[in-house]
Image (cartoon, rainbow, N blue to C red):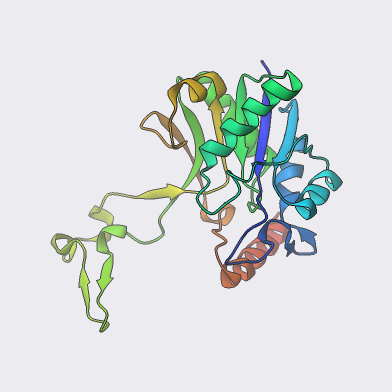
Amino acid sequence: MSRIAIIPARGGSKRIPKKNIKQFLGRPIIAYSIEAALESQVFDEVMVSTDDEEIELAAKQFGAKVPFRRSNHNSDDYATTTNVLREVLSNYQSQLNKSFSEGCCLYPTAPFVSAKRLIEGLSLLRTGDYDSVYPIVKFSYPIWRALKVTDDQRVSMIWPENLLKRSQDLQPAYHDAGQWYWFKIERFVQSGTETMMTNNSYGLLLNELEVQDIDNEEDWKLAELKFQFRQKRN
């Protein structure tokens, strides 16, 4: 059994320029994902798929491999994660004559990812007949009480039938933590799926201190504060 960590990190981020190598508490944010993968010691290969020279240099600096550049086709705003993964796996086979049995798509802006959780995810993938395993987190507020807002700021409930229900009586809801996806490579390639999230995926539940979406500068600052708080607690 051979395993590969694929870190997709293109250079054309728009909302946060150079997001994948932006300094997160004094280090390029991609370093955290690379080091977690290496620390786990479960991968035969830890690689970064990129089209960008600066990202390539940073990736190699922290111990990842960049055996080939990402194609232009898979470097634009419409490139999907699954297409990038398939390109990487195909290039390893055709250019390096290497194949792998298990893969992990590990995002470059996930500083809360840990070697422990990666190992746990691999164990779950192996013991269950799952298409993929990925971390999830519970919504902190019941989404069934969500509001919609009109152009003139008038608000109403999306699901008005839940207006008078107690929050503890509403079904818990969860979302993808946006950190990593373990998957069985042969099944992934043969399925032709366009998403790593299927009806046969296992959700590894994380707590809120292990997760932070980073889509804008405010998210970035919050992530740094949360990261520092976790370090003090540990």
